[in-house]
Image (cartoon, rainbow, N blue to C red; front, side, top):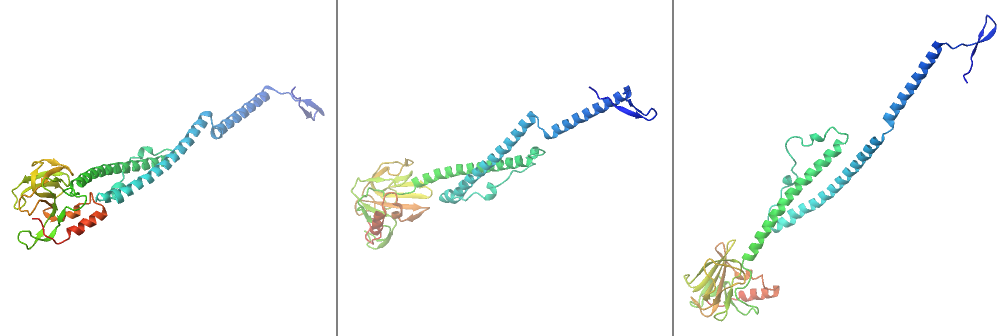
Length: 323
Protein backbone atom coordinates (compact mmCIF):
# COMPACT_ATOMS: atom_id res chain seq x y z
CA UNK A 1 0.00 0.00 0.00
CA UNK A 2 1.49 3.34 -1.06
CA UNK A 3 2.20 5.85 1.66
CA UNK A 4 0.08 9.00 1.71
CA UNK A 5 2.05 12.21 2.06
CA UNK A 6 0.73 15.53 3.42
CA UNK A 7 1.87 19.15 3.44
CA UNK A 8 0.96 22.07 5.82
CA UNK A 9 -1.18 24.80 4.30
CA UNK A 10 -0.60 28.08 6.20
CA UNK A 11 -3.70 29.65 4.70
CA UNK A 12 -6.01 27.11 6.17
CA UNK A 13 -3.77 26.28 9.06
CA UNK A 14 -4.22 22.60 8.33
CA UNK A 15 -2.51 19.60 6.67
CA UNK A 16 -3.54 18.82 3.15
CA UNK A 17 -2.98 15.64 1.20
CA UNK A 18 -0.30 15.82 -1.53
CA UNK A 19 -1.78 14.95 -4.85
CA UNK A 20 0.72 13.22 -7.28
CA UNK A 21 0.15 14.38 -10.78
CA UNK A 22 1.31 12.89 -14.11
CA UNK A 23 4.52 14.96 -14.19
CA UNK A 24 5.60 13.63 -10.79
CA UNK A 25 4.92 10.05 -11.77
CA UNK A 26 6.85 10.52 -15.03
CA UNK A 27 9.81 11.98 -13.20
CA UNK A 28 9.88 9.14 -10.73
CA UNK A 29 9.67 6.60 -13.53
CA UNK A 30 12.59 8.20 -15.37
CA UNK A 31 14.67 8.29 -12.21
CA UNK A 32 13.94 4.59 -11.62
CA UNK A 33 14.81 3.61 -15.16
CA UNK A 34 18.05 5.61 -15.03
CA UNK A 35 19.02 3.95 -11.77
CA UNK A 36 18.30 0.51 -13.14
CA UNK A 37 20.28 1.24 -16.32
CA UNK A 38 23.23 2.62 -14.34
CA UNK A 39 23.25 -0.42 -12.09
CA UNK A 40 23.10 -2.81 -15.07
CA UNK A 41 25.95 -1.01 -16.81
CA UNK A 42 28.04 -1.11 -13.63
CA UNK A 43 27.40 -4.81 -13.26
CA UNK A 44 28.39 -5.37 -16.90
CA UNK A 45 31.65 -3.45 -16.45
CA UNK A 46 32.47 -5.39 -13.30
CA UNK A 47 31.65 -8.74 -14.91
CA UNK A 48 33.59 -7.91 -18.07
CA UNK A 49 36.73 -6.88 -16.19
CA UNK A 50 36.75 -8.94 -13.06
CA UNK A 51 34.65 -12.03 -13.68
CA UNK A 52 35.76 -14.57 -16.35
CA UNK A 53 33.33 -16.32 -18.55
CA UNK A 54 33.54 -20.14 -18.75
CA UNK A 55 35.28 -19.80 -22.12
CA UNK A 56 37.79 -17.30 -20.72
CA UNK A 57 38.44 -19.53 -17.75
CA UNK A 58 39.10 -22.47 -20.09
CA UNK A 59 41.45 -20.38 -22.25
CA UNK A 60 43.32 -19.11 -19.21
CA UNK A 61 43.77 -22.67 -17.94
CA UNK A 62 45.07 -23.70 -21.36
CA UNK A 63 47.48 -20.76 -21.39
CA UNK A 64 48.84 -21.62 -17.94
CA UNK A 65 49.20 -25.26 -19.01
CA UNK A 66 51.13 -24.18 -22.12
CA UNK A 67 53.49 -22.11 -19.96
CA UNK A 68 54.13 -25.18 -17.79
CA UNK A 69 54.71 -27.33 -20.88
CA UNK A 70 57.18 -24.79 -22.29
CA UNK A 71 59.05 -24.75 -18.97
CA UNK A 72 59.24 -28.56 -18.93
CA UNK A 73 60.40 -28.63 -22.56
CA UNK A 74 63.13 -26.08 -21.84
CA UNK A 75 64.28 -28.13 -18.86
CA UNK A 76 64.46 -31.28 -21.01
CA UNK A 77 66.37 -29.39 -23.70
CA UNK A 78 68.85 -28.26 -21.04
CA UNK A 79 69.32 -31.92 -20.09
CA UNK A 80 69.82 -32.87 -23.74
CA UNK A 81 72.33 -30.04 -24.13
CA UNK A 82 74.31 -31.46 -21.19
CA UNK A 83 74.36 -34.94 -22.75
CA UNK A 84 75.33 -33.46 -26.12
CA UNK A 85 78.16 -31.50 -24.51
CA UNK A 86 79.49 -34.73 -23.01
CA UNK A 87 79.40 -36.40 -26.45
CA UNK A 88 81.19 -33.43 -27.97
CA UNK A 89 83.92 -33.59 -25.30
CA UNK A 90 84.39 -37.33 -25.87
CA UNK A 91 84.46 -36.76 -29.62
CA UNK A 92 87.17 -34.09 -29.44
CA UNK A 93 89.28 -35.46 -26.59
CA UNK A 94 88.99 -39.24 -26.95
CA UNK A 95 87.63 -40.51 -30.25
CA UNK A 96 89.46 -38.05 -32.50
CA UNK A 97 92.64 -38.40 -30.45
CA UNK A 98 92.54 -42.18 -30.99
CA UNK A 99 92.25 -41.70 -34.75
CA UNK A 100 94.74 -38.82 -34.79
CA UNK A 101 92.18 -36.39 -36.20
CA UNK A 102 91.76 -32.69 -35.49
CA UNK A 103 88.87 -31.80 -33.15
CA UNK A 104 85.89 -29.92 -34.60
CA UNK A 105 86.36 -26.14 -34.08
CA UNK A 106 84.09 -24.62 -31.44
CA UNK A 107 83.03 -21.98 -33.97
CA UNK A 108 81.54 -24.74 -36.13
CA UNK A 109 79.77 -26.46 -33.25
CA UNK A 110 78.28 -23.22 -31.88
CA UNK A 111 77.55 -21.53 -35.22
CA UNK A 112 74.16 -19.81 -35.33
CA UNK A 113 71.68 -19.30 -38.13
CA UNK A 114 72.33 -16.42 -40.50
CA UNK A 115 69.96 -14.45 -42.71
CA UNK A 116 66.83 -12.52 -41.79
CA UNK A 117 65.24 -12.59 -38.36
CA UNK A 118 63.86 -16.14 -38.38
CA UNK A 119 61.89 -15.47 -35.18
CA UNK A 120 60.07 -12.33 -36.30
CA UNK A 121 56.81 -14.22 -36.78
CA UNK A 122 56.89 -15.11 -33.07
CA UNK A 123 56.84 -11.48 -31.95
CA UNK A 124 53.80 -9.49 -30.85
CA UNK A 125 52.28 -12.06 -28.51
CA UNK A 126 51.85 -11.93 -24.75
CA UNK A 127 54.47 -14.69 -24.26
CA UNK A 128 56.67 -13.95 -27.29
CA UNK A 129 59.85 -13.88 -25.21
CA UNK A 130 59.26 -17.40 -23.85
CA UNK A 131 58.37 -18.81 -27.26
CA UNK A 132 61.34 -17.15 -29.00
CA UNK A 133 63.86 -18.39 -26.44
CA UNK A 134 62.49 -21.92 -26.70
CA UNK A 135 62.66 -21.80 -30.52
CA UNK A 136 66.26 -20.51 -30.40
CA UNK A 137 67.27 -23.23 -27.93
CA UNK A 138 65.71 -25.91 -30.11
CA UNK A 139 67.44 -24.56 -33.24
CA UNK A 140 70.83 -24.53 -31.48
CA UNK A 141 70.39 -28.14 -30.34
CA UNK A 142 69.29 -29.19 -33.83
CA UNK A 143 72.37 -27.57 -35.40
CA UNK A 144 74.77 -29.10 -32.88
CA UNK A 145 73.18 -32.54 -33.23
CA UNK A 146 73.62 -32.32 -37.01
CA UNK A 147 77.29 -31.39 -36.62
CA UNK A 148 77.82 -34.23 -34.13
CA UNK A 149 76.03 -36.69 -36.41
CA UNK A 150 78.36 -35.78 -39.29
CA UNK A 151 81.32 -36.10 -36.93
CA UNK A 152 80.27 -39.63 -35.97
CA UNK A 153 79.96 -40.47 -39.68
CA UNK A 154 83.57 -39.32 -40.07
CA UNK A 155 84.62 -41.38 -37.04
CA UNK A 156 82.99 -44.51 -38.47
CA UNK A 157 84.93 -43.98 -41.71
CA UNK A 158 88.17 -43.42 -39.76
CA UNK A 159 87.48 -46.57 -37.71
CA UNK A 160 86.98 -48.56 -40.90
CA UNK A 161 90.22 -47.15 -42.32
CA UNK A 162 91.99 -47.84 -39.02
CA UNK A 163 90.72 -51.42 -39.01
CA UNK A 164 91.99 -51.91 -42.55
CA UNK A 165 95.32 -50.35 -41.59
CA UNK A 166 95.72 -52.57 -38.51
CA UNK A 167 94.90 -55.65 -40.58
CA UNK A 168 97.42 -54.66 -43.26
CA UNK A 169 100.60 -53.82 -41.38
CA UNK A 170 102.91 -56.78 -40.55
CA UNK A 171 102.09 -58.12 -37.10
CA UNK A 172 103.06 -61.81 -36.84
CA UNK A 173 106.12 -64.00 -37.47
CA UNK A 174 106.31 -65.37 -41.03
CA UNK A 175 106.80 -68.98 -39.86
CA UNK A 176 105.27 -70.93 -36.98
CA UNK A 177 107.62 -70.30 -34.08
CA UNK A 178 105.77 -71.06 -30.86
CA UNK A 179 108.88 -72.18 -29.00
CA UNK A 180 110.91 -69.23 -30.41
CA UNK A 181 113.73 -71.59 -31.46
CA UNK A 182 113.61 -70.87 -35.17
CA UNK A 183 114.94 -67.32 -34.95
CA UNK A 184 118.52 -67.78 -36.22
CA UNK A 185 119.81 -64.28 -36.95
CA UNK A 186 118.41 -60.81 -36.35
CA UNK A 187 118.51 -57.38 -37.90
CA UNK A 188 121.78 -55.42 -37.67
CA UNK A 189 125.50 -55.91 -38.23
CA UNK A 190 126.20 -59.63 -38.67
CA UNK A 191 129.01 -61.82 -39.99
CA UNK A 192 128.47 -62.65 -43.66
CA UNK A 193 128.51 -66.49 -44.05
CA UNK A 194 130.40 -66.23 -47.35
CA UNK A 195 132.92 -63.40 -46.84
CA UNK A 196 133.22 -63.75 -43.03
CA UNK A 197 133.21 -59.96 -42.64
CA UNK A 198 130.68 -57.79 -40.78
CA UNK A 199 127.86 -56.71 -43.00
CA UNK A 200 124.51 -55.03 -42.42
CA UNK A 201 121.78 -57.66 -42.28
CA UNK A 202 118.48 -55.93 -43.15
CA UNK A 203 116.10 -58.70 -42.11
CA UNK A 204 115.62 -61.69 -39.84
CA UNK A 205 116.53 -65.32 -40.58
CA UNK A 206 114.30 -68.15 -39.39
CA UNK A 207 115.82 -71.63 -39.61
CA UNK A 208 113.32 -74.29 -40.70
CA UNK A 209 113.14 -77.42 -42.76
CA UNK A 210 112.48 -77.16 -46.46
CA UNK A 211 108.75 -77.17 -47.08
CA UNK A 212 107.84 -75.40 -43.83
CA UNK A 213 104.85 -73.10 -44.54
CA UNK A 214 105.50 -69.37 -44.81
CA UNK A 215 102.68 -67.00 -43.82
CA UNK A 216 101.74 -63.50 -44.95
CA UNK A 217 102.30 -61.24 -41.96
CA UNK A 218 99.58 -58.78 -42.95
CA UNK A 219 96.84 -58.23 -45.53
CA UNK A 220 98.11 -57.08 -48.89
CA UNK A 221 98.70 -57.77 -52.59
CA UNK A 222 101.47 -59.96 -54.01
CA UNK A 223 103.73 -57.57 -55.89
CA UNK A 224 106.43 -60.05 -56.95
CA UNK A 225 106.91 -63.84 -56.87
CA UNK A 226 110.11 -64.64 -58.76
CA UNK A 227 113.86 -65.27 -58.44
CA UNK A 228 115.05 -62.18 -60.29
CA UNK A 229 116.39 -60.37 -57.21
CA UNK A 230 120.11 -60.91 -56.53
CA UNK A 231 120.77 -63.25 -53.62
CA UNK A 232 117.11 -63.81 -52.63
CA UNK A 233 116.49 -66.83 -54.84
CA UNK A 234 112.81 -67.59 -55.01
CA UNK A 235 111.13 -64.81 -53.09
CA UNK A 236 107.78 -63.06 -52.61
CA UNK A 237 107.10 -59.38 -52.06
CA UNK A 238 103.76 -58.26 -50.59
CA UNK A 239 102.55 -54.67 -50.81
CA UNK A 240 100.47 -53.99 -47.68
CA UNK A 241 99.61 -50.42 -48.52
CA UNK A 242 100.26 -47.45 -46.24
CA UNK A 243 103.91 -47.59 -47.37
CA UNK A 244 104.55 -51.12 -45.99
CA UNK A 245 106.16 -53.94 -47.99
CA UNK A 246 107.45 -57.34 -46.79
CA UNK A 247 109.96 -59.73 -48.43
CA UNK A 248 110.09 -63.51 -47.98
CA UNK A 249 113.31 -64.95 -49.50
CA UNK A 250 115.05 -68.30 -50.25
CA UNK A 251 111.73 -70.13 -50.79
CA UNK A 252 111.40 -73.61 -52.24
CA UNK A 253 108.07 -72.91 -53.96
CA UNK A 254 105.21 -70.41 -54.16
CA UNK A 255 101.61 -70.73 -53.08
CA UNK A 256 100.48 -67.41 -54.59
CA UNK A 257 100.83 -65.50 -57.82
CA UNK A 258 101.48 -61.85 -58.72
CA UNK A 259 98.44 -59.63 -58.20
CA UNK A 260 96.77 -61.99 -55.74
CA UNK A 261 95.29 -60.48 -52.57
CA UNK A 262 96.28 -62.27 -49.37
CA UNK A 263 95.21 -62.14 -45.73
CA UNK A 264 97.36 -62.19 -42.64
CA UNK A 265 98.16 -65.80 -41.70
CA UNK A 266 97.57 -67.15 -45.22
CA UNK A 267 100.21 -69.57 -46.58
CA UNK A 268 102.06 -67.83 -49.41
CA UNK A 269 104.98 -70.23 -49.92
CA UNK A 270 107.37 -72.72 -48.34
CA UNK A 271 110.82 -72.46 -46.78
CA UNK A 272 113.70 -73.42 -49.09
CA UNK A 273 117.43 -72.94 -49.67
CA UNK A 274 117.47 -71.05 -52.96
CA UNK A 275 119.66 -68.08 -53.80
CA UNK A 276 122.55 -66.91 -51.65
CA UNK A 277 121.92 -69.15 -48.65
CA UNK A 278 123.99 -71.30 -46.29
CA UNK A 279 121.15 -73.59 -45.27
CA UNK A 280 117.36 -73.97 -45.29
CA UNK A 281 115.85 -70.86 -43.80
CA UNK A 282 113.52 -67.92 -44.44
CA UNK A 283 114.95 -64.44 -44.80
CA UNK A 284 112.26 -61.88 -43.86
CA UNK A 285 112.33 -58.10 -44.30
CA UNK A 286 109.94 -55.23 -43.50
CA UNK A 287 110.11 -52.01 -45.51
CA UNK A 288 108.31 -48.73 -44.83
CA UNK A 289 108.52 -46.10 -47.54
CA UNK A 290 111.67 -47.85 -48.84
CA UNK A 291 113.35 -47.79 -45.42
CA UNK A 292 114.23 -51.26 -44.13
CA UNK A 293 113.03 -51.69 -40.55
CA UNK A 294 113.83 -54.21 -37.83
CA UNK A 295 111.16 -56.95 -38.21
CA UNK A 296 111.32 -57.81 -34.52
CA UNK A 297 109.24 -54.69 -33.81
CA UNK A 298 106.32 -56.13 -35.78
CA UNK A 299 105.59 -59.34 -33.85
CA UNK A 300 103.25 -57.76 -31.32
CA UNK A 301 100.24 -59.59 -32.78
CA UNK A 302 101.07 -62.99 -31.28
CA UNK A 303 103.72 -62.71 -28.53
CA UNK A 304 103.33 -62.18 -24.81
CA UNK A 305 105.54 -59.50 -23.22
CA UNK A 306 107.86 -62.23 -21.90
CA UNK A 307 108.14 -63.92 -25.31
CA UNK A 308 108.74 -60.56 -26.97
CA UNK A 309 111.60 -59.85 -24.54
CA UNK A 310 113.09 -63.26 -25.31
CA UNK A 311 113.02 -62.80 -29.05
CA UNK A 312 114.45 -59.27 -28.72
CA UNK A 313 117.39 -60.73 -26.80
CA UNK A 314 117.90 -63.49 -29.38
CA UNK A 315 117.70 -61.06 -32.29
CA UNK A 316 120.32 -58.77 -30.78
CA UNK A 317 123.07 -61.42 -30.69
CA UNK A 318 125.91 -60.66 -33.09
CA UNK A 319 126.10 -64.05 -34.74
CA UNK A 320 126.51 -65.19 -38.34
CA UNK A 321 123.61 -64.73 -40.70
CA UNK A 322 122.37 -67.46 -43.06
CA UNK A 323 122.63 -65.28 -46.19
